[in-house]
Length: 430
Image 1 (cartoon, rainbow, N blue to C red):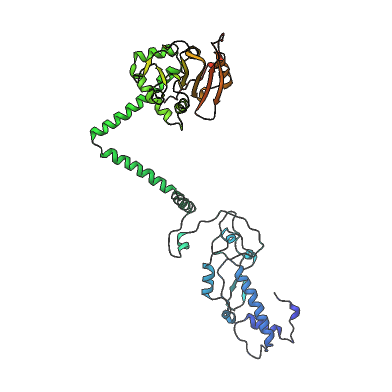
Image 2 (image 1 turned 60 degrees about the vertical axis):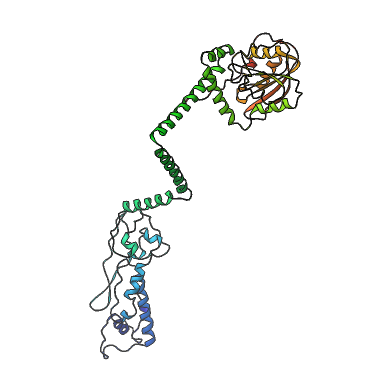
């Protein structure tokens, strides 16, 4: 441990080493006194070496014998150091650097002796938490992290959790934390509150009122289904077939008109209001023919004379007829209106009928659902072949398009007009 060249008989080196290693005092005649400064220096070196070995060993530090016991660590300091939180590398089970050093154990004579070397740890074995720290710079493997025990965390006695139990406990904590985040509990509480309110209102109703509410809801669903069916029939059949349909079942038109009004009411703007605004800005002497008038909204909103035509009369102003054969004389009206009324598969016959009743230079106003137009240019070209000329068009609204045509003369179309085929407005089956 020390260089032998630094010790000689003149300085009393042999006597000093024997005095340091032996706790008992030797007789004065056998142990000559050594210099005081040299004795203290060698003692400090030996204490430093012993403390370094104690700090690097995994076992409990041994007590120094004899005169060295006063300079060693106290039991309270050792307990405080063991209770401190180990560094992260030590908790992972790093192999201590001092494992290669022999353990120092006190002997009966008081001299430190080299003990047996510790057994090598098997591969994959977890380190204990009370292992001493390793020297910096050592490379260590990273085995699985050992879950802390409940007793060690709280400082008191408690059952030790296994690795699986500790993982499950941490997972449950995360679930409980994420379950009550900001906003989630509020939405859940609101939805639960709404459900409880509906349940309370339903349970508070008498049995007769409850059955009446359920019956009304079922009737509304049934009428919605009938509206979708009638709407499909009107778009996929001719005007003659649609007239016969409503003649057999007059109540079907009321159901259809109610559903139609509900659908158009969801739009931000109704096209019939634009047509009414246009007519109010024109002379009141103009005669108007409203094809597919419905509830006669135009006739009740303007001062002009309006001929209202539809398949079923919802008002005394309505004239029931086929849109392809209206009871008007040739060139007898100034304005013809088709507001969401170009329905059926015979659009050519209907528009030719509008050309027949219009005076030369008369106005044809068309407002139709935007999704029905596959090719707007083809539609405009087909209408011009029926004796009209495009004046203006409005394609800005996402729900409906508006066109203004003026009559130039009789129809000159020969053969079929593919541009007049519009897509039907069909609803999804439920």
